[in-house]
Image (cartoon, rainbow, N blue to C red; front, side):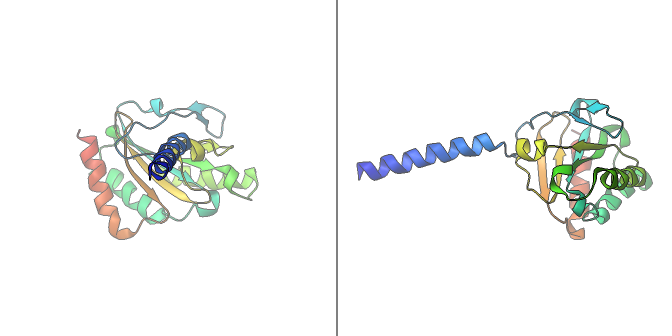
Length: 178
């Protein structure tokens, strides 16, 4: 019985260590910092937008259109309805170029079109660094909401159902008022 308890304890401790090493984001915890270039080679960090709530779209280029309806709803809430204050919020994309078969030139063209469509910044992760650092899934589309203090407030993976758009908009509005 003592051996069984010892084995269970050892497995619990080691699995906790492995989870901590994987860098998974946790809602309520500070997010690890990163640095990525834009198309012109200028490096960006989260500190480029001090005091703003961030919507980080981490995207496999093969999934780039997956959450267009969600991003259209956010864009409308910011630019048309003025429900989300632009001075308190920044959405941007980080392209996971390692997850695609597409050539870099095509990826840059797709990213450029998205940057124009959403009037935003697109950054490039050439080595899947953020995927590993934040524990995001490969070959997917993830949306991470980060508050002004760089604490993770929500993580969405895959297609965001349109029925969730308003709830997420309300969360962003609340975060901008904190």
